[in-house]
Structures are given as C-alpha cells and as structure tokens.
Image 1 (spheres, rainbow, N blue to C red):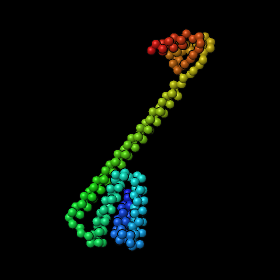
Image 2 (cartoon, helix red, strand yellow; image 1 turned 90 degrees about the horizontal axis):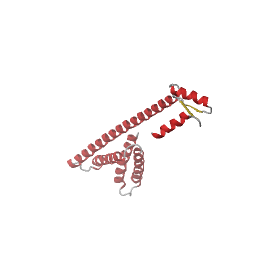
Image 3 (spheres, one colour; image 1 turned 135 degrees about the horizontal axis):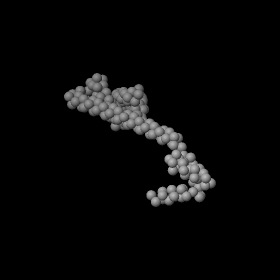
Image 4 (cartoon, rainbow, N blue to C red; image 1 turned 135 degrees about the vertical axis):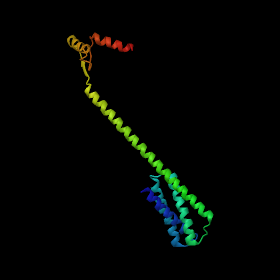
Length: 187
C-alpha cells in the first residue's frame, strides 16, 4: 500500500506542476484551485507513504516522477523542446529511482531477516525458560526447620547416603549445618 500512496503522490505532483503552468501565476481560478488541491493531496499521500517507507527513498522517487512527468507533459502539452541533454538527464533520473527502489527492497529484506532472527531468539529464550522451569519442578527442594536431634540425624543420614540431595534443612543445634556453612565461607 505505501507504494500505491507514493504513486498517487507522484501523480498529484505532476498535476500540481501542470496546473501551476495553466494557473498563469494564480490569475486563473480553476487551474489555481487544481494546483493547490494537487499539492495538498500529493503531500498527504507522500506523508502516508513515509509512514512505512524510508524518507531517503520516498522523497527522491516522488520528486523524480514529478520531474519526469513534467518533462514529458511539458513536451506533449506545451511543445517544450526535448533534446538529448533532457533525455539523458531523464534517463539518469530513472536509473537513480531504480537504484533507490532496489536499495529499499534490500533494506526491507534485511529488516525482515533481523525480525525473524529476533523472533527466533525470543522463542529460543522462551524454550530455555520453560526448560529451566521444568527442571526446577523436577528438582524439588524441601526446606525444613529441624527442631529435634532425631530429625536432624535422619536428614543428615539421607544426605550422606545420597538420597537427600534435594533436601535443605537448618536448625540451631545441628553440627552438620554449622560445618557446611563454615565450608561455604572458606570458598
């Protein structure tokens, strides 16, 4: 759709320029109104095209088509001379517009690749997060406040046998906990 807006803007640009010639310095009402209307509508379409297309592409293409249209219509409607210099210059404008269009397509393709890469990274991040959550659910940690010496001995024995790796406990009188805390401070 932005390219259609740009085409409409270019048509309005040509209509504006041709109407200016017919307006005869704004002394003729009809062509003057057409010139002003063409300018307003053309700028509106140009603005709509610039919402999604880069200004470095839109504006030169708009002015190029306006230039080519006025050169062509000046030759047809006003019998203005169309010599080799004008033709070569118009050709250079066409080549420049094609180059800008290709550069815009390359930029759009690069932006699409970047968007897909970001989406892939986001989904990979989500997958890693879900994997961590599942691992955390499997590796349940039981936290207990051990009050009596009998419970502390049971937990300590389970940890020493390798059965209580997912147990975490604490208690004021537990020598294993004090030793473990001292070990972790030394590191």
